[in-house]
Structure formats: C-alpha cells, structure tokens
Length: 240
Image (cartoon, rainbow, N blue to C red; front, side):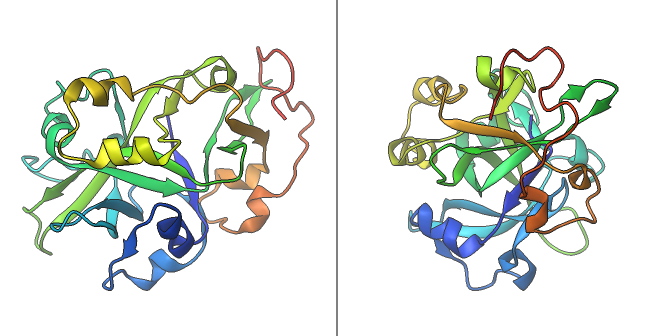
C-alpha cells in the first residue's frame, strides 16, 4: 500500500536514476513536495521512443485506456502485483507500459491505540526509492490525452508488516531498474521482482500527524517526532 509519498527535488531524483527531465514539465512538478496525495500530478520515469530514460508528468491514479470516464482513478493508485497481469485495468500496462516513480520516501498509517499514527518509510542508506509502476493514456477527455499511473504492491516482509501488510515494490539497484523498464525482460523475470525489499534496507519512523491533512506540505513533516506510543499496535521491538 502507498497512499502518500515525497518528491523533494525532481531534478535530483532524475539524476539518481540517470534520467533526463522533459523540457515541458510544468513548474509545480519541480517544486519540493512532501505530501503528495492520490490524483496529483507527479514525476514518473519511463523510456522515451529512443529508449532513453526521461521524467514526465502523470496523474497518480490509473485510468485504463478503455474507461468511459475518470471516476475510478482515485481507487487505482495501487495495483496488486500478484494479479496485475490478469486484471483488465492493468494487464496491458503490465505487458507494455512500465515505469518508475522516484521518491524520497512514503507514508503509512498503522493503528496506534485508538488512532492512526503516520510513519515515514525511506531507504536506510539515504538513497531514493524507485517504486515499480504501470502507466496508461486515456484519450476520451475534452482536454486531450491524459497520462496516468499506479504503484505496484507486494506482500510486506516482517519489517514492513509491523505497520502494513502490503508494501510498494521497490527497485533497489540499477540492475533492477534496467530490468523493469526494458521491453525485453521476460514476464517470468518481472514477476520475480515483485517482492518486498530485503530486511534492514529500509528506515521506518513516526512523523507528525500534520501529514494527515494534504494542505500541510513542507520539510517539517519529516522532522523527528515522538508520539505518546511510538510503536504501532502489535509491533515487537523498535523500528527506529
């Protein structure tokens, strides 16, 4: 599951994945964003017609090309990797339209006592995350083609399961990024990539409940925070 995420500096994120920024990116995409919510336009990395990695803008929430309207977009921000190859909404994108959403980290909301406490998940080594994604283009709107995307998820490992039973599929090295984007990667190899990252590769920590409101968007959302009960219900040990 991934319901909010962070793109602090799209130029830096592009450089980390050896991708070029398209010159027509709207300026808001280049601004620091610490609380990106579903249906927002985001920076996405894919291969252009020349096979070069480039960053383009897409709406987060996939609208299949055959959809009559956009009403289901908010529900299709994530796709279960176990069934994406078979589901009508995702199967063509699984075969032909794969991408990466670069992110500094993402948020989850485990239950803590009688409330949900936001946690921030990032790489333990400080490098950005490459979230495996699918994209599509919807051409039935009055404003021209609409490019949309979703994040693939997999069952959580023991570490992530303390806060959620699902995790975004994270491409943790250059080889994985290349395999995922390549049109020549066999389907069996793509399925093998759909799993949680190795234990110890992520850092999980509580952050301020200000994250709960989309109107809050700034670096203060990632500042150290100590809730009254830091560990989510059912957690064994500390995730710090």
